[in-house]
Image 1 (cartoon, rainbow, N blue to C red):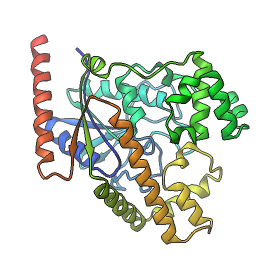
Image 2 (tube, rainbow, N blue to C red):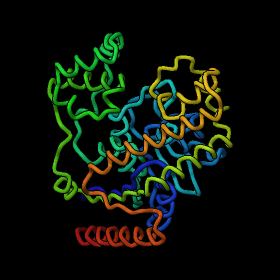
Image 3 (cartoon, helix red, strand yellow):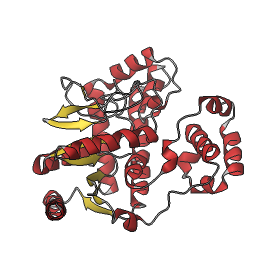
Image 4 (spheres, rainbow, N blue to C red):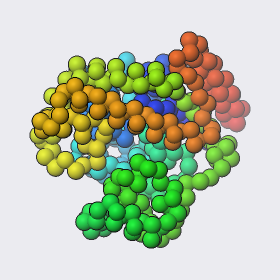
Length: 337
């Protein structure tokens, strides 16, 4: 019997987790985070986990080879949220590890008769669970990364263009401007010695999966307003103190965990380079751009059912769609047995 998956995706600040909690209650579900920021420990406020401080991490014994990673969940409103706080800030967590761990968690949740609900805004994490992306399991090559780190962005660009021009053409502007992503693209190319593509027939592949993908969106002005309000809320919750503590304990700023939107802006403030008001404006602007990139990514996935959360009846529409899908699956499964 194929795996049952409910997926809730979309740009930041659209209420994905709140919807996940609501549907988890309705359909006996457990949430699996698909957020590349929230996998890291001690980054609760800046990444917007919105989980109560007294909600402790509950470790679960699943067969994971890497002893530097923890598998477990934290409770939000009595609903388990898996795959938050699984890696230390100094660890370079990657999508291949996410795919392996999330797949085991999905199996565990399903084996207990509950519905796995993937919730998040990291498109590659979600895509890796749906499509056979063999390249994402390639482990980091630290020696190669050390050599490549000596090249500037232009050098990395020319090297990638030389060994895998097709991959370079497939990258968006943000990826091309990010040395870490350029290095990873080179690393994958040299490891596979091929220019594998993510392109597959989405609908044909999903026909072999019991997956329903719900996308949440908002008009641009309303989305940006929500983003601004969330950042102001994080400032009031003590995000500056959280960032200062993290940076004091991790003086090597060049870590994947610290590349999250918000950290560069807060670091500039803590270093005395910009005023607090400018810091907030710069963070808001960066989050607006981040949400735009997220939406562009998800719009390329043709099997998503989109809902505008500014519409009054969107929640009931989603609930009806999920009920129709989930009931049909359960009836089919019962008949197969």
